Length: 308
Image (cartoon, rainbow, N blue to C red):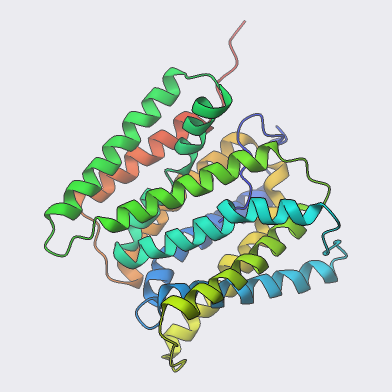
C-alpha cells in the first residue's frame, strides 16, 4: 500500500499522464489489488502476525538495498527518527497489523473493500479535527460507505460462518491509515520519502516479530511451493516493486489518475480472489465495491474548473 497518498491539492503535477506512467499505474493497481487474495492464501499455512513480520522485514531489507544502491540517503538524522516513529505507528504498524487480522477473519475481497474506505475516513477526520469544509461530496461519500459497510455487516451476521469481528478490524485499520495520512500531510520532513518508508517498515516489522512471538505459536516453516511463492509475492512485489513504482511516479501523477488507481484496487482484489482462493463474490460484495468506488471518487477526484 502507498505510504503517502497525494490527493487533490497535495502537490501533484497536472501534466497529462504518459504511456509509460499509464502502464506503470496499471501494474501497480494489479499488484496491490492481487495482494489481498495472496495474503488470504498465505494465511492457510502461516499465522497472520508471523506472515506480516516475515514479508514486511524481507521487503524492507530489499528496499533498503535498492535505494542505497541508487544513492538515496538511507539513515535518518537527529529529530528525523521522531518522524519515523510517530508516522510509522499509524501508517505502517497500525494499518498493516489490523488489516491482516481483518483478512484472517473475512473473505479477502471484502477486506479490500473495507480497507479502502480509508480516503473517506481521512476526509471525515479532517472535518472533525482540522476544521476542513464539510461538502455535499463528503456527504455522498459517507452515505455510500455506510451502505457498503451495512451490506457487508448484515451479510456477515446472517452467514453461517460469518465473522463480523473482521469488519471491526478492517475499519480500525482504515481509521489508523486515515489518521496517519493526515499526520503525513502536515509533517515537515527533511529526509527522502523512500528513507522514511523503509525505516517505518523496518521498525514496524521488529514490533511485529515481538507481537508474533508473544501471541502466536512458533511456525513450522515447512510450506508448500505455492505458499513460498505467495510469501515471495508479499515481500518482493507488495513491499518491493510496487513501492518502487509508486515512488517513481507518485509526484508526477495527476490527482484524478491517482484517485482512479485507488478506486480500482478493491475491485481487483474482489475479482482476483475468485481465481486465487476460490472466493465467489455475492451481489452484496459487488454493490459494496460500487459504493466504495463512488465514495472514493467523491472525495478524491478534483472538481472541474468552472467554465467561463
